[in-house]
Amino acid sequence: MIHGNKAKTFLTDETGAVTVDYVVLSGAVAGMGITAAATLSGGVDELARNIAAELTDLASVAITVLEANDFSGGNRGNWTGGRVMEFRNFGSLLALGPGETATVSLGFPEGAETGVVTFDAIAGDSIDWESAFFYVDGQLVADLTAGAFVEGGEIVDGPRGSFNWTSGTGPTSSDRGIQMRDYSQEGITVSYETVATNDDLGANERWKDEMVRVTVRIDNPPQTMQFAASSNTDQPVEDEFWGIDNFEVGYQ
Image (cartoon, rainbow, N blue to C red):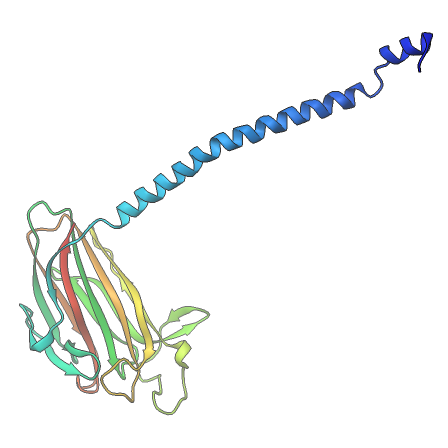
């Protein structure tokens, strides 16, 4: 038991008071922070979900397909030029040989905001650094080059004939790739996605093939346009070819 002056001194002594106050205040602040975080987290999560949903909606605006042609049964639609041919595994393709050009008319409804052209571009058989060229209303918008070299992850120029397809010398399978060059036109964008590279997809089983999915987007397209593709391969189409398949025209 504490008596007399000692009791009075004990009751009035503030030693340690700051520490006690700090602990109490820190606990209160921490509690408020936890409460605020719990309150805000729901709103932040909801906002994040809303943003993701909006972005998904923008990315998935439906495309109304106007024309689709896989060239099956020799159907060339309204294409002129090139040759619809049957290849092992590929089935029917619109094939382009040396110096050949194929052209098709595109039609869009009045008021279409964006015209969309998609197709598979196939580099078949012994293509080595040869290209397919794509045009909209006569203007070059992009080209694809197959059988290219890859150095440090970057595709670089290489001479024709530099890929020895049968002896195993020259670039390995991991060195081969397709490169797209786009020639920017106002209101026209071209992109592609790799489907397969340096693989036996079809045609002559001795050779490797490559395939990409090309998308051409045209802002405020006129109601009629011309699309064309050409090839600078240097062997007969039975030996190497650029092919077009699953051609679709639509709008948004």
